[in-house]
Length: 162
Length: 390
Image (cartoon, rainbow over all chains, first blue to last red; front, side):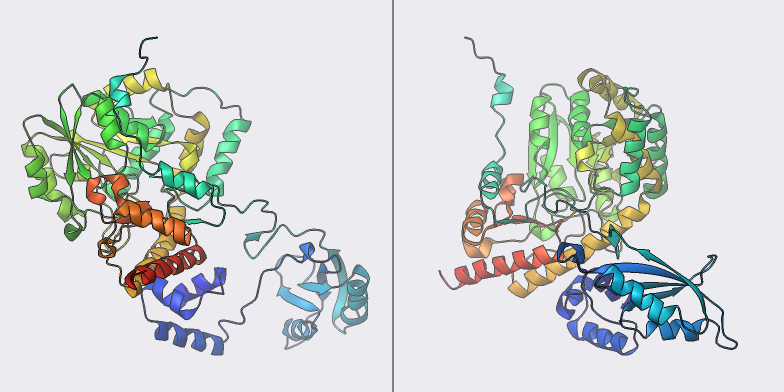
């Protein structure tokens, strides 16, 4: 049942336990308990909202930073990745295979200058960081499986059909 | 000027749901649960094949019966899924939607006076197609207490010595009813004994929920030589606008159907046929995803109706439910009209699908959960008012 619940709320976190229970043909209390348990176990890590910020403001930029690091003895990449992740400007940190860089870090900031400054001041000088390369995102086309470019969301179907 | 019109055509009753369509389209904040098609986009790999076919300049007619590659894929798919064998060369025809398949199957078989048994409630085209083909439609009222399945006794009661064809349509529009293998066995036995041909409209075959998978009557003993299976891509792959279907029929009948198709249509749209190859080859996972989603909405609606105390048998197919509204003391048409005017919610009166649909309405769940929740709220407001005598 856990997987079924997760598949539903992954696409729509606003579904409440009552709706989920109806859709899965089970009772509300069972769903509530599973939700609580999964929150506690950190399987469910939050209920966020997908926002196309480009439509709201120009003062918001995203950058992908390739970070090359020398792994630390006994710690591998985990320690440096965790340290980078502590900054609130950082929204994702991934370890990569088969790339010239080791980590890819997503940073959100207000302006290009702010982000560049953050990388230069906080990431680049870290002890085991060998080099960084900053790529600014010009336009987001799709995120979390949702296309940002959908022009028309009206229901174009014939509304009454035999 | 002389009367330019055919009497047969003029005598065909216009569809009763036109007026709902007109009102809904003038009502901007109306919600409609009246659609008859999926709310999913066609899976992109299918669109991509269609686009690729256009880019490669595949814009000519195909052979009358359709692309051989597609026919082979369809026959293999039906064999794999439903255990019936058809020869791609002589027993498979690609049509313009399932609707064309129904029409030309009837035209290929009927002579004036031949009777066609049509269990109702059912899709609206069967009766007019029989009339246009010169046959005599014999409608048969199915019952809610049988979950709108056709029973052996009902079938026997409608058979005369002029009966030639039976149209079976499961999973059913508008009721959502299905017929399992066990349900179909006695029907098949009668068809063989009484020498009746069955047109099996299986357009909703892939939208079957519950433990029992869809079963085609063509797979039952003695039925291969007397079954025409009509199916298509519209519902299974969310491809309504591509207008593509197919018929699987014994070569004796298929040959004559191809003749009509050749003169009336030439061939089904070429772009759609190329796209459909990708659908049959790689579309099983798409079907599964959509079916899972419909099934959740189906359960959601059943739960909501239960909470509102509106009686409804559990439908295991298509994307419709067919609740009974008799307790409100109105005809289906009145119920649907008032619901639309008072709550701005459109459903389709059961009578649009035959007189025995009186007392029922069809609700489509090809909508998002948010839309369904809002719509159920409106129904709840409406019936609460009526139950309180307002």
